[in-house]
Image 1 (cartoon, helix red, strand yellow):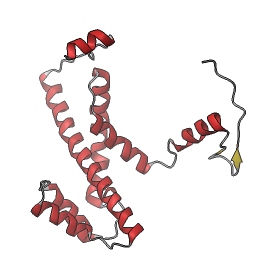
Image 2 (cartoon, helix red, strand yellow):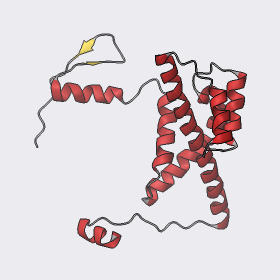
Image 3 (cartoon, one colour):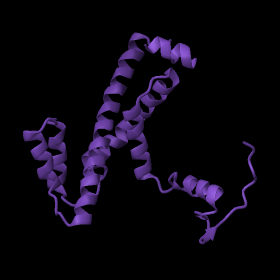
Image 4 (cartoon, helix red, strand yellow):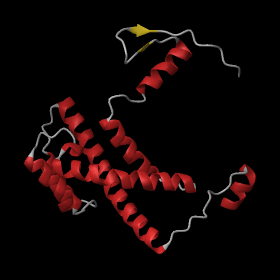
Length: 182
């Protein structure tokens, strides 16, 4: 069935001709391990950030360390990693995002290069790695002052004259965009 899909669409498989020497392979496997750990951390950071947003919106007063403990004790997610989350929230129950906890911040700092390497190599090889890509995008977005919303504002202005704000000067702007041929 997949072969038929490629024949009909003309899509080709990615360039699967990657060969690693023994030393390179060992180093890359370690990078994949670290990328996986980073990605798992980013996933939990996003999940707990969502819980925090809901708790603030609805005044739930959630206890995040307890939630991690409950996950570990009575849920399918029983990862040992959850103890690190419990420890982090026990040290500072008001930490805004797990990425700001000293342990997780250190992991992010030390493992981000591995995650970028794995994502870049996967993209070059035509191998989809959506979870890894989402993890580095979340991390980059979280620590960036300028986000892709600027591009979205420009697109909205182009399509519907909705105006946009600039980062270099205050005010609201509109551009007369040149017509593009279909």
